[in-house]
Image (cartoon, rainbow, N blue to C red; front, top):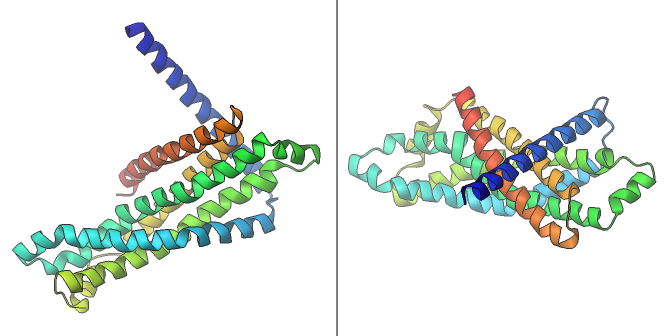
Length: 257
């Protein structure tokens, strides 16, 4: 039983190291087509518009109601201690630095990362990528790099918009639930927060976008079990992205604190 457990852990560790090495090679290939830039601009613009447009409704809805949850959770404490003066600061601080970037990245991963993996996986098992190579078209230049850059830029923009919607939602819920004036919330928010707090979240969004893009492209390009493998790769991409987001968040919080 112990030997079996050790063998399983060894296989998991070996697979993780293999996947990490392959992602590192993918990064090198993307850098190769980026210096000097040889990324297909039409594909870049198409994917950026599609990814941002597809994600905006769910991101906006999530951001709005997450802010409402924050106000509901804090309402008992605020009413008990008459702490309305810190509501704007506490909400903005948590949304700017942690909750906003993480929640939006996880939603983006489930919506766009999974879709990207499925698309690339379908192209892989139907030999479309091999067809591009036969036509002397570099798949990294034509397919992968535009998607990576589009996902990073889209998540950056969506994080900015999502946090803005969350702040407006928090102000609205504060007025309705806590009977606060918008001026009290506004002063609490902008008198105690600084641009560095907002930049903190945007830096995280870039790192999260890179993690989602690389994992989704990697697993999409490395289908190993035919059509059945597409489902496995989508699952692996979403799980890996979530783990990468949490790890990136920990290290970035430590370095930027």
